[in-house]
Length: 184
Image (cartoon, rainbow, N blue to C red; front, side, top):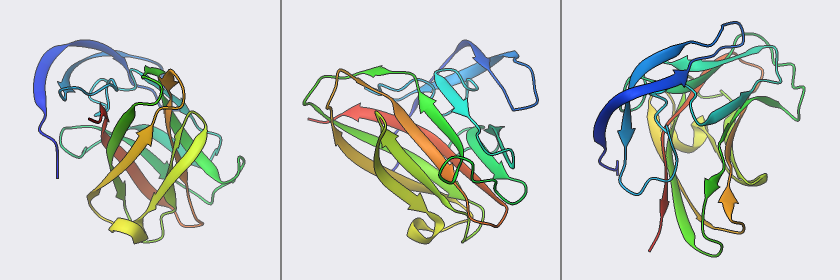
């Protein structure tokens, strides 16, 4: 079930970056989901609130279109055979630290897209601990699919990381509409 999104327009000095481009400020419309603790989980403000690492020279990571519910998504394309330089990780995106309350429960929701059935997988880590992997065989390919993970805070902050790991075939994988919500 998709959560409803309230749209609030404002100027956002988001940084759009690819491995070969320079930073540019852009005007954007950011979405706000009530109680969402993560900033810019829909990537409408570029890479604002996120850090990107691309250890695989065969991968290209950027803000692509279309997104799940709005215009943009974080996209990783494997353009040739992977170099597998860091345990198979071609690219990763990590949130800024998010203040949380130790021992409290949270729900992370996000949408993944795989362009084909053998396009590797997206791994979820929180505070450098692996929790979940998703691939096209789990939910399908050719469209965005909903993912959810419940987490109990083990520290005073959460850094959410998604890692993109590819097989030998070229592919396009995306992640979008990320929300991190307190649970009752």
